[in-house]
Image 1 (spheres, rainbow, N blue to C red):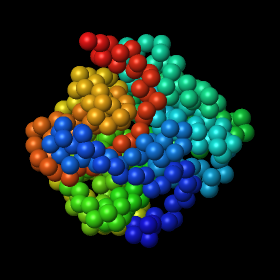
Image 2: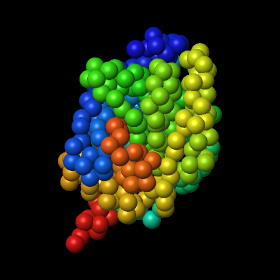
Image 3: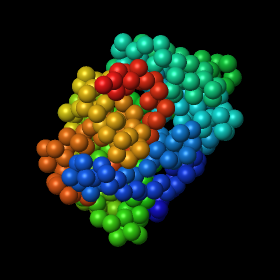
Length: 344
């Protein structure tokens, strides 16, 4: 597939995922929403409960191996899926992993700081650091670089996996490839898709998928549901990633401003904070399809999909693909809040 994307082959890639992931029909959710809904099961990518991060990290770990690294340093939210999968990949490869947890979600209890992805990271041997400001990407990046400097002084060879803008979006390459995988699956099954609905946070998944589809000549609408910042700021992030991808791959800038569709109507009160629409969406998916969604990402994406169906941004009976990006372990960190929501 890489031959379809210019210089993609020059970027080292370490396979971590079980691919291709399946596309499943969701008949009961379809009936509830008035859509023809299918689900791309990227929660089943295999490593450490799977999720979209395995596709992204294949390129970072490829670069780390090429650089001769023996240690991974990464930053993310306290309940970061990214950190969990990075720690699992490092364990598989016999590398140390040092993780910085950014306090992005206010007023969370002790369970939030001990269960879910935190517990899994501890089992995987992650060395933890804390960063108190959840909305200071530049500061978090400086802090994680300082951790790497300390490790170098100890004789280690660290590789830093960055999250903020200002670094080549290597992770987005995983979803450039995923776009080709989806197109191949649709063509093989004779299925037409009008729109994809996906989380838009760091922007690597959203931008990679959008760029990949447009580079393949596909005009499928891609609706990003904002999970961390409001739409005006997120538009700039996605546009920037797409421009960088074009440069990295030696391809034309195939993504126009009108291609970048974002919805932030279910974001409030902020990243990782459960709201009624998200709680309802989590329950709806579980009880209609036996599908587990998480509060920070896929739950909000399903809530956004429900809203886009209700306001007819997604036309009645449209063929829609929901990209399930995983995050299942985080459900346990939100157990008390979800139990309160489920009380009669």
